[in-house]
Length: 260
Image 1 (cartoon, rainbow, N blue to C red):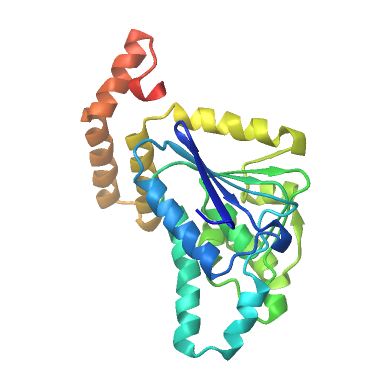
Image 2 (cartoon, rainbow, N blue to C red):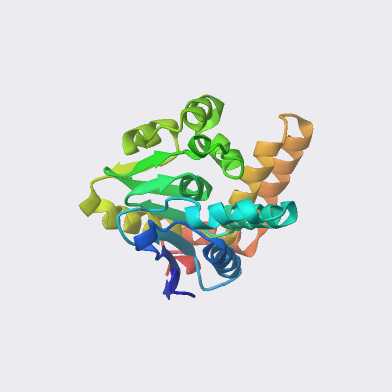
């Protein structure tokens, strides 16, 4: 898409690569906008079944480009609000992508970079990866990433790491739930491919529906309304063309049509 963001589609898999290694893949207005557009387009691309989010260089993503951030001091309130909304829209586009999104974290993921990890459905980190929410050390708050980090690691861990700004390693990220697996750096590609292969075995419409269901369940109290929603959700999928194909493939001992 641009020099700062590479999008490659190979078969059913799209790979979105942050490509500002000299700036630790920090995002400015252009990169944030391009990430938003990339995930919006990939979300409606029928040929794409899974999206890998990765980065070049020693860092995964250092969050907001400090140069871009410092220029905001001379902007008016409306311009600052516009820039903040651009970042919020970027995370929302990734979070709402109906395809499985797999983040592959090879180095530091700081501030908004940790937010990118939190909005992925599956996150795999190298043993050398590190994480931090350092906004308070700049006199700021991790406001835009907070909803996603809260869902990923919970209020208690947010209190510690958002308030202290301290770095934590990949094992702590695994313990808190920010990442799902930690592997040696030379095993990272294999772990990525394993997760991609696992995701490609699921029905694409069922996966999109599942992601939306998780969002609804998270926002809904237990009770009759949620029971009716989940029952309807299941029955609709069971009666769908994809649901019928999945069951037929199981009984016929063959791969379903979406499984290649």
